[in-house]
Length: 567
Image (cartoon, rainbow, N blue to C red; front, side, top):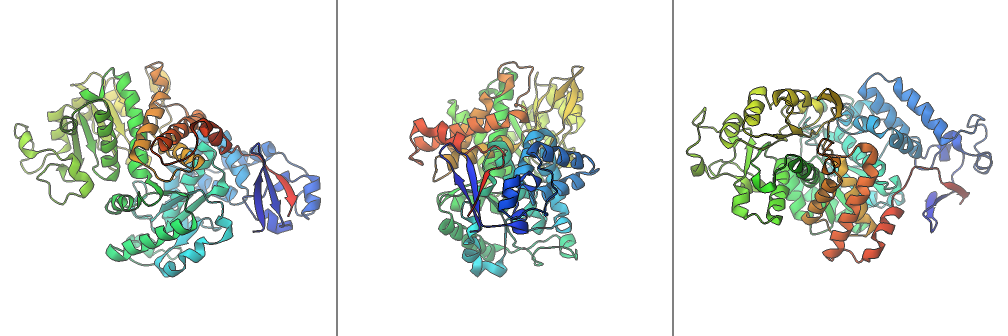
């Protein structure tokens, strides 16, 4: 390879490269633009290709930030940041770390949604790998490229269920790129170890297929055995090329997400962030919320609107938390009421997916309920009869938590806990301001999309975004630091409890449930330690316990230009 990173014993990186002039400046992972020193410019034939001024990274970041402020739309800002990442990754991550709270909603939820919608129109330079059935017999060859030699974390998507936006085809590549940015920004995993992959299995989105600029495979989505065979071909190639990689599945449709995870979770170190990461951050935040409400898990009556992979994943982890606290399984299950587009899931509901069956209510036990319609148990029916203490939305239906329902819930519990978790913002089940007004300020809430600061009790208050970035970057950091061989459900419970312990509300109930993003690297470190300890206790890592923290800190890169030497 034309360049390599050499790590000193103290963790300092040096780049050894044979590249010179434009070839060096065109490599985003090692380019530092005007920050090349006079000596380096001489050594690598850069004189004349750069302006004479020697810039510091701070100078470059200020120039980049000022340029970012000239962009008047979210898409414009997203596009500029993508171009910066594709020209100078170290500067990109330095800028991101300096302005994380401002920039994260652009490169991740909700801004990444627009990036995916317009991905084909703003595509400029290759990043990551696109795999499709057209190249199924070449996957090993494609992955063998030496530039991927140091890969530690892969995020992969097939683009069928992008946020609440549905099938975006090849535009879904924006998700793996965005997620891996957070592995670096939030947990310090060096970008050289991250690899976004898109599995282009076609699209059923006619708008994309009819777009003359669409960059993906113009084919209806593969289904059935053809799809399964392609996924298996990909996984087996990953196992051969990267036996120790952490593989994260992202934004797969519910019909595929669970079966894929179940099929491969015992073959390599893999997890699904929509199912498990969403569950962990939701449960971690809910554990903090329950303490603020001066309640217990045993007392919760839980209504979840959206019975897909995310809703059922949250339910499973919450159920496990109840069992861990000594609750009988049947009693715990009776506290869950899951709702999909057909109404409440009961044992009489037809067409249930396997992962939904664990949380059906016996229809006979509901015979005493008062219902609006005899053939369907609606969301309103459930709230009126259950009197929930905890309401979670993962439905993708914007505004579905209407005033009547929220007020009905608040009338029967002193501190209603309400989490509208769908994203992007337009898909949120309710807005924080409405929830505050409708509950007369008693609500304890977290959202899936960023809502910034609102007025609460006459004072500015930061709305807690139950963002998966509180979990998956630290999870990945812990896994790679101790070279864990598998990802288990108990790790997500450990991550959830670690996050709950980090809650500012644990110290003062008037404070936020979640720490600010400015503390995210500290959160990731705590989560990574919890994951590493769990892996060792389960026999999934041979790392000595006493070395955990040192290994994790060694893997936490802070954006800084490395030293350079001629290869």
